[in-house]
Length: 108
Image (cartoon, rainbow, N blue to C red; front, side, top):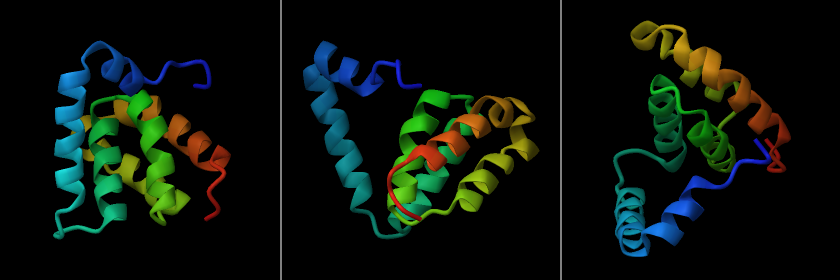
């Protein structure tokens, strides 16, 4: 995934006003208190795996790891999508998620 252009950078360049509004939404969601930051990231990874979105998985695994998520938590978050989405999320996202976790410089 090293050669992929960051999709958010493209978004920011092509639609700066919309990108700023989106960033404000993200900031507001980060401030909610019902779930801790690690849990929010794991849920996001599960949703993106269910949608078969490996690019999002690649970027959010490092964020989850920075919040204290373990390799096993990331793996299980993706595996649980099997019950509602079948193999697509697992086969498209699990290898990328585990590689991103293993390559991340954040210690866990």
